[in-house]
Amino acid sequence: GEDVEQSLFLSVREGDSSVINCTYTDSSSTYLYWYKQEPGAGLQLLTYIFSNMDMKQDQRLTVLLNKKDKHLSLRIADTQTGDSAIYFCAERAGGGNKLTFGTGTQLKVEL
Amino acid sequence: DAGVIQSPRHEVTEMGQEVTLRCKPISGHDYLFWYRQTMMRGLELLIYFNNNVPIDDSGMPEDRFSAKMPNASFSTLKIQPSEPRDSAVYFCASSPVGLRFNEQFFGPGTRLTVL
Image (cartoon, rainbow over all chains, first blue to last red; front, side):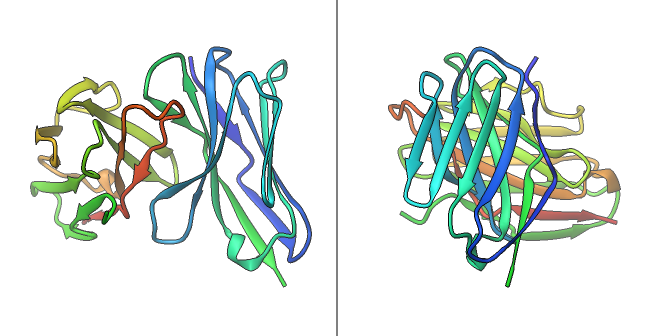
């Protein structure tokens, strides 16, 4: 079955890099995603990676995918206070449109 | 486009009452999803529709929950009767066909409190 796990909490200082990790179990995942949820709001897509890629970079965001270990990470460079939010990884398995979301990691950025 | 619209934003009701949550997806999107978010269980998919037809309702917790999509621009999630353990934030999301990576666009959510 599908199971996506993340650590619950991460605290970093402003200007440092943040690395949020995620593990998944479904080897048939085609796309993996990172969503951001700000307080009182819905989730918003940050970035995604196709399963045949190892890395994707988008401005301050770097996504790394290790398919062998079923491990996904999101690195945020030069973390700002505005990056404080809950970050969810999600996987899409096969050709379906259903996503399985992780538990979410609350990122707190301190001055 | 206004994005996914949900109403009400907040609902407080008493145990045993019927609750109806409403969602208007983004125009032209073919998929509509209902999620529930709680501290204990995180984000759970309840049901999703394709072209107004329910495709997977395996996440609907029990018979007290029902969802309908009478047309492409409107969906409801009904809880009858409501119980305190139904207290959660309920999100609606929609997704277009044609995007290979299937981004889901989320509404702001309805915070439900059942006393």
